[in-house]
Length: 333
Image (cartoon, rainbow, N blue to C red; front, side):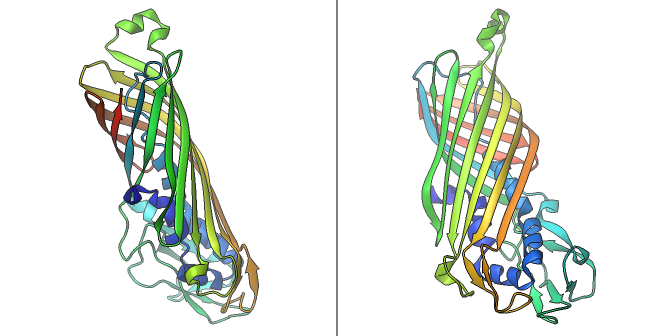
């Protein structure tokens, strides 16, 4: 399961706020660091909420009482070109200018990559003349997809209702970084509400779901900045509501849905940091950066599910802010 852990949580923890990057960010000043971090991580926060809104269903049919299904859900979220960068306008920052003299410049975010080093210069006050190279993205090249995954189980309840649970235990997927996930959802089938619907070749249902993601990264282990209790923590909450329709065929069925997702992320750089250069040189900062963002949107999903005895597999594609391909492999009866 390690290769399916929520990589976005780690982007907001280990990769994005690595010991080198946080030093670079703080050297441009506290207010500037906060502003830069919000823009730098905005797309990653959106992508995380988008990713965990997927994989909730593979049929409009709910299970009979105490019938169950257990499996693994894997997602691939696709990153559009415009979500790999942002425009940094130095007029929105304090005493900051690009080394090349431009006022506005497109720079890579956590998903992107700068073709060449992008440097800014402190123009006034303490640290005037200091040149700081802005952090790049997750790697030397742009990132096109983000994988995620978790365990998911469902069981039939009374009154045409089904409960769904998703879980990823706390795992140390990358050195000094941990991530965990849990979620709960309820699906209710409407087919039996109206007698004529029982004769339709399709089933209808609705679903609501909630997912929480927590991540942490211990900076202390390899920190290049003197200080104590240095770490990054992430808390993400995502909600999803959707209608579902599916066919009634015996082996291969098709399903789809129109839904709405919304959520928020809160990533914090915690601990004390003794900045060595720039406007904050010789100062000790406590819990210096907090990045919060919200996102919402409409999504449409279409997919197919095959059933062979107690084994099931499904594949679907979702049109949303970050388009997504989801694969599920399940066991149940």
